[in-house]
Length: 83
Image (tube, rainbow, N blue to C red):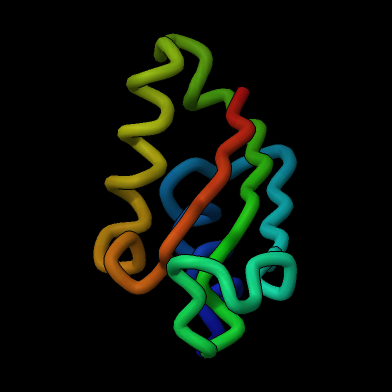
C-alpha cells in the first residue's frame, strides 16, 4: 500500500475527520536532504475533525503522530494543518 493511502486510512480510523487531504509533496524535494528516492518522503496533511476540539495545538500534533505510528519513521517530513 502506498504511504499516502496508509496515512489516509490511519487518520480516518483514528479521528473520523470531516475533511482529510493528504498531499504527496516528495517531488518538490527531489535531491534535497531526506529524499530517499522512493517518491514517498514528504507529505502535507490537512485534517479537520471534531476530535481535535478539546486539544491544544501540541496535543493535536502528538495525536496525529501517534495515530501514524511506524509511518513516522518511513517519512522524512510531514507538514500538518490541523483543526
